[in-house]
Amino acid sequence: MNVVYASDDNFAEIMGVSICSLFENNKDVAEIVVYVLEENFSDENKQKLKALAKAYGRTIKRIPTTSIINELSTLHQDRGGASQFSRLFLSKLLPDNCTRVLYLDCDTCIRKNIENFYNQDLNGNTVCGVMDCISKQHRTVLGLEENDIYINSGMMLVDLSSWNQNLIENKISNIIKKFNGKVPYADQGILNLALQGKIKLAHPRYNCMSIFTVFCFDDLLKYRKPSACDSSVEIEEAKKNPSIVHFVTLFCTSRPWFKNSSGPFFDEWKYYKQISPWQNSSERNPQKNLFQYLGVCLYLLAPKNLSLAILGFLHARIKPRLMKK
Image 1 (cartoon, rainbow, N blue to C red):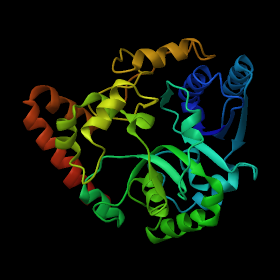
Image 2: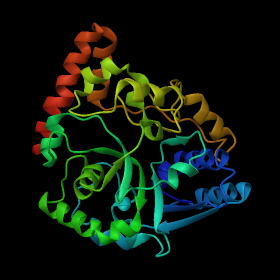
Image 3: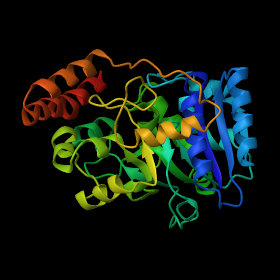
Image 4: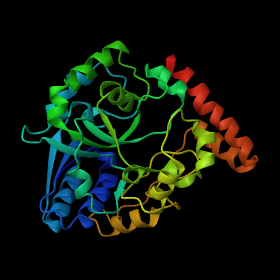
């Protein structure tokens, strides 16, 4: 099983905890090779990754992202540095013998054995991922049709042979040029455009995002106003027993590595931190931008239906208009 992460030094600890959860819950898998697309790791984090690999008898290979600097030079990097965008150029960075990889964001927690998921038939598709909940207006800004598939790219099972045969990285470069380097939703928007028609959908248990665990289904619809999403039954199944939890940024909740944080599956993430080489790392101070702080105040102080109606209008209608500028 080939697994890919991408991180800079600031997120190396969060990534390390995710890798620990992967190793801990997939001990029966014969071979796991983790490729880390890394940007400026400290010697301390490099040594901790070595210690983690040794503890589980696994292989972790670091791959610097310096070789794709030219490809990223025209890209407006508003969601991270080179490491965040390195997944756009997987075939340039990974060894030729990698024909299939599972890409995971650093802010994930792997709770189950995922070997069967990894080995599934992609039915001629290039990637398999979980549908993200975005509005018609968000799709329009990208140039997608209302019901085009749009996945969250924090978990992608990738057939690299199909990726290369379909010239995905050429398409990615052309998309970056088309948008003059400023693509809505950054790397995630780029991937969804480049992969259209080659995406297989997975059950949301394989990328159970915070938006699923925090909101009930009706509130999710009110806030995100998605033109397409998984059913209430599927999302409820994912919430009850996810295989992969994804702690995405959300205005009304924290993330497990922040001080005084609590939420669904936070205790599990903290457990994996305690058995990892990062067990003594200090918790971080929460960080929210002005919009997130205002959202929290509105969500806590106003009646729920009113706050979700206002926040949903801002997220689904106003945010896409701002992305056009």
